[in-house]
Image (cartoon, rainbow, N blue to C red; front, side):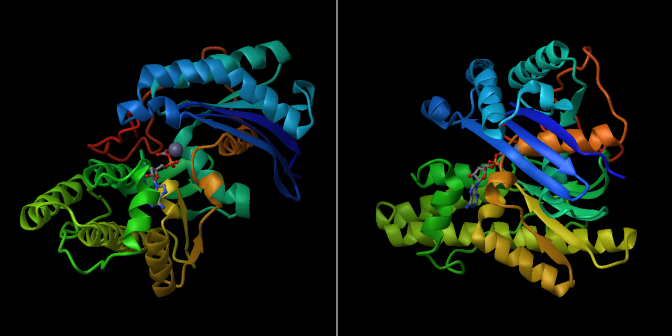
Length: 364
Ligand code: KG4
Ligand code: ZN
């Protein structure tokens, strides 16, 4: 029988410092607390995440987040069965802060330590929230990640494809910047898009002419820049209506690419596991209603189950790390005081490396 386990998780690989307590019992999983301290204001003046500022902020906030997570969960360190921490991939200063904090806690409290791959945390979230059985298809789509994975086991993932340059959230953020919209760009572009016509401006659907599930979003952003400059030249400025049309057309292009590549990923998945598939999404971009709707349409075409965890668990958090730690612990994994922080750590060690990386640091 599955043993009841309670883990503290730590996350500090990018610009969110997070700590959470998760309990997993034979009846199901419970998030006892999930504390996330963002750093948006610290990085805002620089137009992107500054690794050194992020690392310092993590070092300052980690123990406070741990304290708060334990307090909210109503337990002390003595009630824990282990400590899980993101050991990569990510911005190395932040990952090191988290790993050092976790080592100190584990050594001090005499608890097992488990290093978790951040991407595995995202990829295992549908098991935390919905108890989804392996195997399933996963689309990670955020500001730093974009890849299709077949999740086969807690440490067993096959990558079917991913972005070769920018991640979609990164493209949303850059497009927002080009159009003088606020950051983070995703929600701002989505709001503008509701006022525009998605068919008004013709934009490319990159890499659809190429077989497989790899994607590219940086050319799309350049196409938006060119279209913007053409409008500015014609109108002597960027009228609001045209800006809305640009947002709607860009969002439609991203949605089309993700939908078509999801079809291909589902085909590849079915060749591996020919039963009713489940497609799960995670990452901030999964909050986009137009993108969600087009992925749901694809799932209807394939009679696939569509799972989108609540947004607070789609974006970076430590509950997913605590839970991934529990899964790894159950599978027999244990780490020692030599656990290393890794800037790069591909989930799938066998597939060839992707060419690109996201703005938020080195990715798998
Ligand atoms: O998962 P996340 O919080 O952080 C990582 O990148 O790891 O994702 C943040 C990204 C940002 O690029 C943001 O612009 C994008 O997700 N995003 C969206 C939306 N909400 C957030 N993109 C499109 N539409 C949205 N509604
Ligand atoms: Zn993430």
